[in-house]
Image (cartoon, rainbow, N blue to C red; front, side):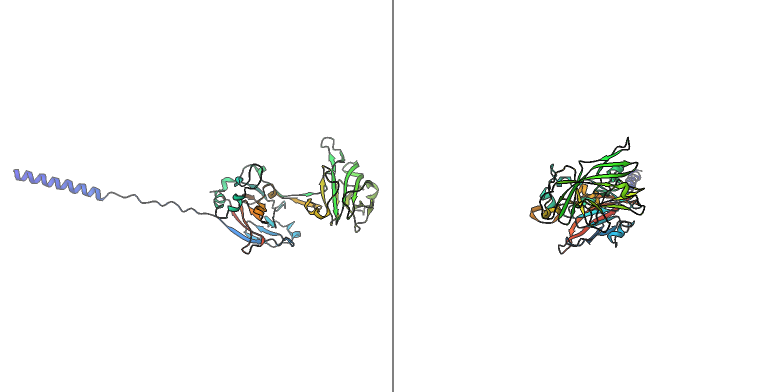
Length: 372
């Protein structure tokens, strides 16, 4: 009986050992879960040529299709396909009401400028497309501002706007006699303001200019003179579409003669509108700061054609110029959000030069922002 008992104990022990071994063998190992791969959306376009400084050209781009749209400057005014355009250092947005494009600057790389708004040189010269990719990737659909006011559009303005005052309460119009304009025709200049006008409902029956001329070769404006026009009489002929005024002679002239400004006619009176001759340019001198214009440096004064664009990108320029005495443009690698009627895109300029160093050749990143 003792032997049988010992054998039973040994058998029980072996059985327990076997059971313990079996439990250990069946223990499941947890599978290793790999993290999902990080997908960097970084679509690069370019280089897009915008001509030379002597012969600048527009490059029109459709963000939806990611391609250049071949257009002339005239056809681009009515085209609804292109979203953003480049011309040397300037960037334009489509202003067509059927494809109105706006832009928001995300504010990255604010440290590229000091508190006085001056470039921190080492930040600009050390930045590369690779070093600034992180800022671009960080902008997502969640980055799109909900405040529509934070998006800016390009606007077309008229350089001679501001010659009159309008009281929205009384609806009366008066001359803005202290608002001076300077018109350039070749190397000659004319400075004027509207000193008097007569309102007839929504039109002018008369207008009086104060004019001073600077002849070619002169350094200052001469004595001022008055040029008065009876618009009710000049516009009385229903076939007369506008009145054309030559400030040098102080007379009304024909449309095909040399003139400085024109006033459209409507209902036998002049409208509250002044237009420049197609070959003339002008600046506003509302502070009456200029007693003359240096013809040799006139191109630095900011003379504009009759209609000109104020560019949204100018509020937050994408570049600085002439760092380290190098006559080139340096990108701030700012990330912008460009809003079209159908989508939002992030946008970053990475270069203004092609591989041969030719300027005006844009390379940029652009990707649609979609909700995750």
